[in-house]
Length: 567
Image (cartoon, rainbow, N blue to C red; front, side, top):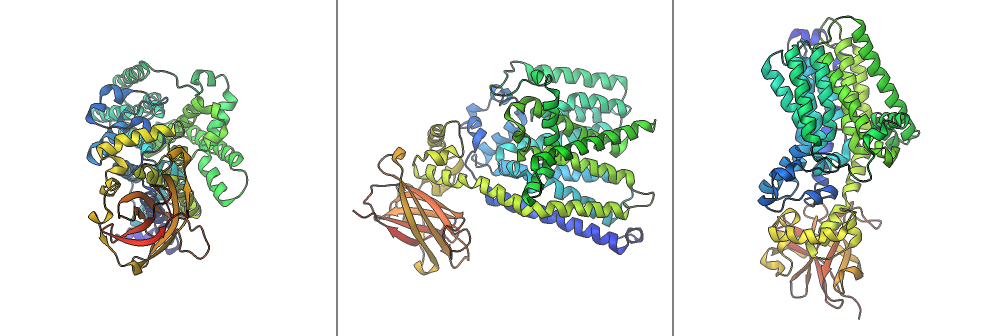
């Protein structure tokens, strides 16, 4: 640590910096734990439309094919890596959902620190604010859905492209890097198209040559031509050109979207009306952005460096809300409050804050105490809603466990499958057969292939005294045939001090007839936290069924309870 680090960081200011960093790391840790706990190998919603069952499914036609209004070429490449290297288990997708915001955080901190002599406390303060914002669980829908890697990917591609344009010098290589990022953004999510006109404006403001600006114009035209070739308007979505004739409705949708992180925070704290407060803060954010632009233009000198980069990234976020609204205003203002849109809008608010931090920093190293207090307040606000957001996200992801158990057991439960693919639950059951045949997704793990085989061919027996549990009820499922049933119970592994996560159901001959998954909230008073499990099996009504908890990392089976319906 240099003497200057302490000279300009009195104890109070240093304390705020350290506390901000601690808060940011807390949010990162709890979000990572949420992702680990909410992870599921089961495809969810739109993922069922983009399954890669064999190498033949990976083609240029598939890569460039529309998904709703998007052409998600680069996310599909990530999905392909997950399919071929990780057996389509979502492990790589979920990893990317954490890795991409981590890279973006490093990039934004680097931009904010560029050309300035920052001390250790200033860096800690910046890192705390950036990490708390980019990893906030207010984005739980994107963190807990492998398909949503596109939201994190487009933010990173746009920010990286702007950094190359504004801070990468005036050479051809930095322009080429910016163009590559631009192309990645466009073919990651439709909002990446906002980058096309934005890059031209930023290149002009950054003092790029006329030839380079012309190159960006040509690239923009070429990318849009490729994007729109064969484009089909998605049914049910609003036509963007028609939406322009409803400007007030479009603007209101964009304002609610822009202020939605604050609206969601208010909802968790139960203060005021989320939709109205989102619109209010969206308006405030837009005014602040407009004032910042006017201030820079009023100086009558070129905007450059980190301020231009942050203005550009925040401008992209505004463009995102307008573009998203133009295609989705038919779905109402509730759509603007969808947690998935908090990813680009949190980036907007973060860039406004970092812009203020860069501009209000005095001549000496480090931001003024007021800015450190403000940064600490931002982190405290995000920390205060983190637990509620994590809880909401895990509850949202919970139905996937029920659907997973049903598919593993080969039992058709329409309600369970509807929760993971509302358009056609029966299609999920058909696709599950293809996944089982290829040992993909939930069938990639050996335990998913035990059905119909002796349980103790796969595991050892465990001392019954180490676990506790029971069976609460069994429900027949008429749609699943005469042998399809759901079983609900509870379990606890005393040796591990936690509920069993995997349950196997076997008949009296020890043959595996079904599966269960644990971790559900306790359904009865006095039970251990999240000790309930839900499972499915196929057997005649009078067949005795024993539920076993898998313990010791799945190497042993501990009997929980036996069930036999009364004749």
